[in-house]
Every structure is written in C-alpha cells, then in structure tokens.
Length: 214
Image (cartoon, rainbow, N blue to C red; front, side, top):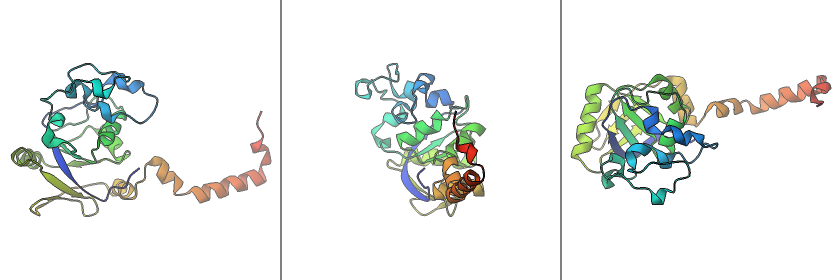
C-alpha cells in the first residue's frame, strides 16, 4: 500500500448526498477475480450513457458529458469532496478500490458510512470528516475557481488551501500510523516476519512431524 504523507491535488465535487457503493462501483463489476481494473468503472452508471460490463472496452464507451468527472476542468482530480453519508449501501471493498485506482487519494465529506470508512483506510485512501458548513464552503470555492487545489498534510492533520488557510481534521492515531507507513493488514503482520520465521523454525525443530503431509 502506498504511503500517505502530504498530498496536493486537484479537487472534484460530488454534489450528492447518500452516494452508495453500488453507484461507486456497480454490482456487475464485482465478477472480476482480481483486485485491479476497477478504476475504469468508477461511477460507471453516471459516467457513461451506455451500460457497462466487465468485458466492455473503455474506448468504445459513451461518456456522459454532464457528469462531473467527465468535465475537462476536473481531469486528473485526486481529492473528492462529497455530501453527507458517502459510501452507504453494501459493504463491498471494491468501492475504495475503484476510487483509489481511478486516482483519488483523499475524500472529504461531512460523514461516511461506517464500513466504507474503515475500508478506505485499509486501501490507502484518507477519508476526512469536516463540518457540513466547512464542506459547503469548499464546494463553493471549487465551483468558483477552476483548477482549485488543496494540500492534505496527514502528519500535521491539516488541509491547506492555496492562500495558506488551514483546516484541521481528526484521524485515529493507529489509522494515521498505518497510512503514514503504507501498512495494510498484511503489511502490519509482515513487520514481524523475522519473529514468525524464528517461531516456525523452532516449532519444526521440536515437532518435526508437523512438516509431514498426507
């Protein structure tokens, strides 16, 4: 998992409440047996005018010109602001996979659905909860200024605007530690790889029959 320390990026607005995980990555794309390729189908039913399937060729699709992420001014956006209860619905982990693989590193909203919120941290995304009035102001600024960027400093726990104004945010210390170091659940375990190897070697030396297979 990529480390998250300081990220500066273009901001895109998702001006909808209660965006559910089936909207983030529709159910037909859950048929894939790999963890890759989901970014192409992020918000598929909103981004495209035609129906998408896992074997659809992206170049042959019909983009919806009215959808926010298809607008040229938001091309390459890596920070998404949204309204309350973002990521509700099913618990599919494919939703943060799709957001991360599309290119987003941070999400800002007044609230997130609990399971989605937990899944984002485990996949290198930083979800930031801010007061509804603060998020509304960010929406206004994004609309008013093309090319609007923010800098997210996880170590200092602040969002920095272009003019230098800072917005503080909270993050649970253990989740912060994992993001700063790029540790997913497997990475956390592998910190103890030498101890695990030593234990397995000692166990095999004292109980060699455990190595036998039928």
